Image (tube, rainbow, N blue to C red):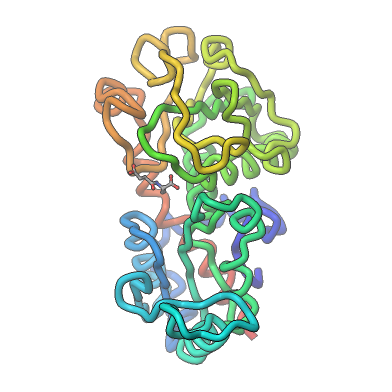
Length: 321
Ligand code: SN0
């Protein structure tokens, strides 16, 4: 693999999932692979799981890690070309990314959408410029439209825990929130599940209230419904996440009642496991009774972030020229 920014960068998702599960059984076998290699993790937004799991994954592979909170500790970056930089931006991404590439063999980047201009966010303007100028392989630590390390860990978690004979029914459900959150996590989860569905690994359904449709490019082959009860019927995995409207971009819309998952919602499921990428706002997005009860997989899922990150870094290290 030359970069990891979406499911499209992965030649074989089954193989990558199996590689992650193999690393879980044998975490320290590749310590020579990362010797004298440096991973730079560049954050423009907060992080807990992504930062710690990716750092730990790199350590397991024998790498050194540099972390920079660019938003707080770096110069204000300019991304536009051809302008006179006489305002608040201090350094152009052309120089900043290129310099980071001088010190690091692989770079990870987190850059959330601004949720103001949909075209700008969905063009991945900042992310693509960073990739173009840094000159080394880039791992997405969540971009404006995707969070592939999360989605890989999610697929790993489903593969690892599913003991049934038939394919599991996986349901992505929209949840309430008080802020406008990115579509990155559900976009990415959906594109990975759609790919997994194509490969016969899962059956995939998305449930959300009217007005919260995801961009169609991310949902090929998914069953999409506004009826939560119908979607949950017979579900094996329920993946809970809030996202803001793609249509009414950046707005906080009033939300309908009944979308916060409770134990009652799980009655007609197949004793479903409940997943969430975290951070989760208790009793707003997801009820405490579900989070603290036997259905919840959220901590196990977060634990698997490590093996997902390690499988990706291992693959990138093997392909370094
Ligand atoms: C981010 C998101 O993309 O939804 C990161 C998820 C991994 N989540 C948030 O920004 C939550 C913010 C909040 O106030 O709850």
